[in-house]
Length: 146
Image (tube, rainbow, N blue to C red; front, side):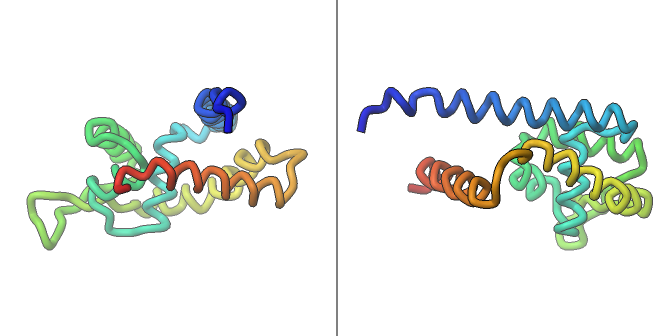
């Protein structure tokens, strides 16, 4: 198989990911959410998986520790999350949604879904299924464990 037709795939992936993130951030700003896309991802993941420590959260989000620490610091200042001493390891913290954080996630989730669906206008379920399969295959092909 010739590689020429596939040469630009990484550029297309990166360009599209940036476009999706910029679109979402513009919508967040227009609707006065007061958070960034990266902050939303932290909140959403804490809603889905409670009692994560910062290392687990960093791995889940693909963020380095200093970046995640800054995001969590900002969310703490906004009183959306809090750090708690990890009962099984007092040297580390787990991150939790506050009551306000839980309220905001419930309030914002439907709006986030609408924002995310904008990218799928004019595309079918089959397009989504094929897209997901292709991305998962690329991810698996590049797995560092093999």
